[in-house]
Image (cartoon, rainbow, N blue to C red; front, top):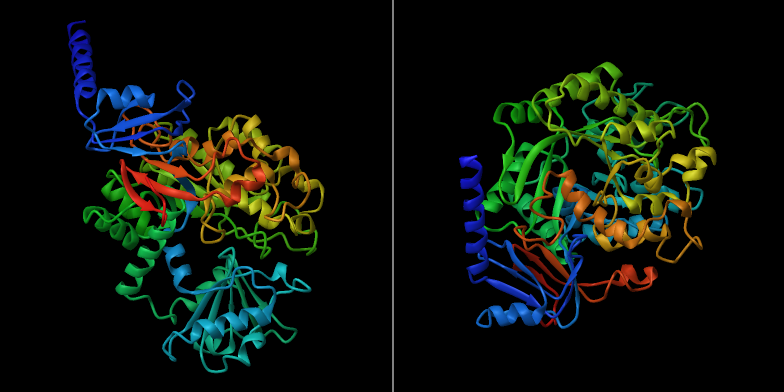
Length: 555
């Protein structure tokens, strides 16, 4: 009892000291949505020199208490906790910003035009790289071929990544550099090479078939990597992101993030899910978790299947628009279980990419089995995407405490052709946010940038409306799966923080937590949902320090 009394006295003393200390910063006269149900809306907030919140309440009370502290005047604007993207690719975003942008190209001709404009700024010998093509938007929705690129680029190698990152489109010059014999009927395990009637590769390589180019593509220089990271961080901060779960971090990139933090040049918190290759997994098992104020690494990411758009997602039954094709499982059940067991045995969080219902079932089976074997593991294991799940597997996922890490904009991007791929019946388990929530599953929202645009406002809008930016279809696609604005914002704040073991630090604005917050030009909770995509970030704060201010924003 003496120890408990002493500990309580020390806690009271610390609280008293915190209350008495003069804060380092104040934000006043705003509509500050805390995402804390016990104190959901306040006018003002104060934080200390370490960037931790020391007071929340009315503006007059806080200013009166600390009149000598310079205050940030919000002028009635809305502030929310810093947004966290629960599934993105930081370096992938940076390199996408350096490559040719093919997102939204209406046809092959527009792809070629964008490539020609991009090539004008590059050395003539450099490979021409781009990302974002999507054949489902083109007339006929057919996959392109090398021939489509060869006329414009007969000698220069061209390699273009599909929007989902699960297919590449190469010209003949690029295929000519490959060291593997591409003739015949060879297909790699977990991948697929599109071939013509004579067995020759047409130029499209799905999933692990992309690996044939790894040995011949010149690796980026350190200067290019640094520039890519700069571009990614600038873009993320400008859109209100104060955190991101990096899904598939290499050891090299993890060191890069840590060096940036040590230099005071990391304006975002990164929860790194290490690339699940043997080297990265062995390194994490050996060195244990990484836990610094802005970089954590305590999990690993594996892949179970490919993507729906390129018909690489593994389905229980064949694709409705491609009879006989059930997609691609990357691992056998036994191999995936061994990977899960090794990671859980090292006390790591396991995150597994699974899009099709067959892959989701395989992953849920493996995670449940692993949790039973390693009951001392800290848990919070995740399925990344959960795009198509069999109805019988929804309560299994929820009951096992598995996090559904989902990306709302995938639904609004895929809705144009999802029924063609799946048929009407399987849509019951397609992008089923509400069914998962109602079953008790934890949801964490992200974007999968650069597969989708990094702007979290687009994710919130998609979650609330299930419509594209033109407001189609009326009422939303599969509208019973829409969520409220509060739930959508929670998916990018409180729920994303919980999925990264950071709920005591970020995700909500509460006493003792980090002063990570975003100031917006409108109130997300009051405007027409159709206006959410037009919401602009005026400022982004990390630890109470502005890491981004919009040009002309006065605060």
